[in-house]
Amino acid sequence: MTAGGASDDRDLAASAAILVVASFARYNQEFRAISRRAQERFESRDWKGSQRDAVERLELYTQSVRDTQALLGSALGERLLDIPLWRAIKERLAAEITGMPDPEFLKTYFSSITRRVFQTVGVDPEVEFFALDLDPLRGTSSDGMTVAYANRGSLPLLVEEILANCRLKVGWRDFEGSVEHVVADIRLHLQRVGEARPVQVIELVQPIFFQMSRAYLVGRILGEGFQLPLVIALRNTERGLLVDAVMLKESDVSILFSFTRSYFHVDLERVGDAVCFLRTLLPRKPVSELFTVLGRAKQGKTERFREIFRHLEATNDRFVMAPGEKGLVMACFTLASFDVVFKVIRDRFPMVKNVLREEVMAKYDMVFRHDRAGRLVDAQEFRQVRLPRDRFDDDVLRELLGECALSAQVEDGNLILGLVYIERKLTPLNLYLKSATPEQAELAVVEYGQAIRELAYTNIFAGDLLLKNFGVTRHGRVIFYDYDELCPVTDCRFRDLPQARDDEDEMRADPWFQVNDNDVFPETFIRFLPFDPHLKTVFLEKHGVLLEADWWRQLQHRLREGEMVEVLPYHSHRVRVASSY
Image (tube, rainbow, N blue to C red; front, side, top):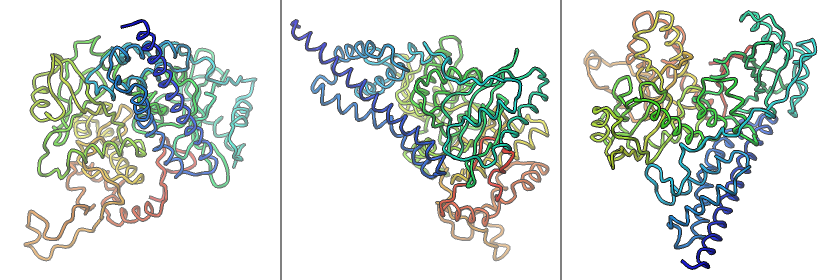
């Protein structure tokens, strides 16, 4: 290559790197602009607008990567697949982003582009930044993330100062009452945990967190020798702003920042710094989930990939079949000491599953975009994943290669998964009930019914209500995780079960009346639930209306009228969740 040619390549690599940096800046600017709109939506009580913004922001990353790929195609022309050139682009980009906020985000963005250009299987470190080398918390600090409010001798005055400084363009409905609410909850919690020392400082993250119809002040309480998380939920009613709940336990805050809820809209200049702070409140929450719940879903996926491979490097764990009954649509495997499950779509489904592979994928995509209401697992989609073959038990390999050949193949000592969904590991409800105490079993049955209700409130009918399709979290919450028969409540036809005409009709194995694909008979739900008589009574006492077609038809009407039925991630002192139901 001539000196001029080398110089031209350097110039081309530099211009391409600058193009990527500029494209990411536009993406990030638009991401933050949508996030900032959340405050306007909250102030004007525009909940439908909040839902539209959530979907728009979810789609933003993929569209930006596609647009940037097209721009690079035009800029690089016939050299688009020139690996030495891409290696030079990567090196120049790494130099360009030094000192930028969250530089690992930009590396992930660059790798997303190269994976699309080269259709990468596994990882190609020549043209992408290897996830195991990335650390999104490198160089981060929670310093500067918070505003500190000092206690000058009066907890009520301290709380009053915090609420008065809340930068929302909404008048308070009951300011004194909201101050008393926060003070009373803090005092009661300190009394319960036996903490007699006074509160010294309350630190709050500067931006407000928004999620659907609520705003949250997120921070912590500091005293001499103790620390507590603090989250204050704000509700904007027709008559003004009020405090709806106060969360002071790690478990309550963890549920708020859960993998089963919609992502927060919060305008953060340095997301890594925010994650660094949140880890002080939620030390057991994986970093991948914190990035994801802050709306940085792609970075969350990158971090989860890193967590999995770091775990493989540090252990001798093998991939084994996931506990529970064998799925008819998905093959599920896991690592015994790691908190995720891998799900691969089978090539063929039994006749009882009237669904196509493409429809299963569409339903998982629907869940990604939908309000998960704390009752649906966030399933992350990964493509062209390369895992070491020798870490798989023989029965897992046999099932994947024999029944999932469209997605799984062996190459160079690795198992390559063309499409795999990764979810948090839960205890299947049917297994949980076998070992639960009577009290735990009762609570789980009540939670199961509540999960069906809350999914319905957000226009989701689970379809397959068998207990094996629901899981129990470490907080005792029941979550739905099998999506192949999931559909909108408004797409169903809820029918009363016709009365049999005679004894012959009663004895028939198949229905003697016409049943269409979207027909649902709620009266029959209880037949499929293997509850003992006591648990069946518990379920009927708490959730008997779920067996009434009229309850579902009334809910359909309200959903079709555009009503948004709230499902909150906490127990409000002032508002009962969806109390009319």
